Length: 356
Ligand code: UFG
Image (cartoon, protein in one colour):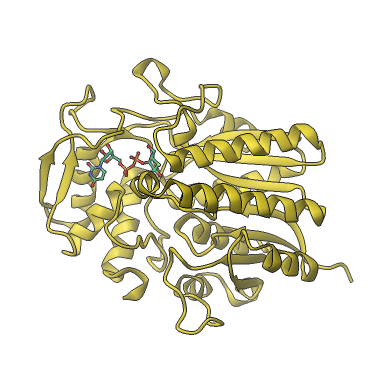
């Protein structure tokens, strides 16, 4: 009998990881989830499946979801990784694990470098040791050097680096480390997916984004205003040179983004070396437009105040997603209205996230 081949998913209890696991299981691909639960709600006991993975079991048919193995631990823990690679046949790794709060990374840079960079190095070294040389890396639009209007839409050829915060630098450095590795050893293939602004939730309303503490990002914040966990939205600046003065971003539905990963997995064996793709819609939407669209999904106006700009924010960012369309056969299909509807479905059913 041929041993089943697993995809190892680091950070699988997080927002993007969990939605990607649904897509993998739906495609009959067995997954091993490694997560230390520092940034997600855990089970009551250590060996209990965390709520997000229990909910995945309610979305995906049992014959598929039983092919998910959960291991509580850090993706940078060599001992845990060695046990996994010895026990299971791992064909590739989807690496979502890592800290991701911009503000926190400015206050605690060493924690970010140690966890994101140090952890990724250990993971890669254990992969090397066990002859696993295929990775899909969770990167970010934030690796691009601060774009001016003349740089839009951002293509994969746009300059990277000169990052605005340690979080972004870790993504940039990990990409470079993976590039060097692919140059040195042709058996490696890495697809780096540069996400624009992932939002929304699974259409079932069972899984979604559940940030710890005060949300840093726009849509989880608006969603918490809608369930009255926050009094109002602060809009960070209305004097940008954009269509209505507020910041413009390329919001992409989380299920579209998750499908970008299975599309990348489909071509991983045919690719060589390091390749990066933008995952976005190519369409820019302003803060006021997002607020209006989400208010329509909720069915009432949501309170907001105009405030000063948030330091480090740029006026406008959106991508050219045509390389992913051409080479991964992937396109975002869902609209901003779909994103708002599905986010509201999750937030209204789970006002306190997975602790609800
Ligand atoms: N915004 C508000 N109020 C809020 C939060 C955000 O007005 O409470 C505005 C921002 O100023 C920006 C837009 O909403 O114009 C989007 O902000 P997000 O924080 O949701 O998203 P960003 O584009 O700033 O952040 C994204 C990723 C991060 C990444 C960052 C790098 O989500 O992971 O890009 O710039 F680090």
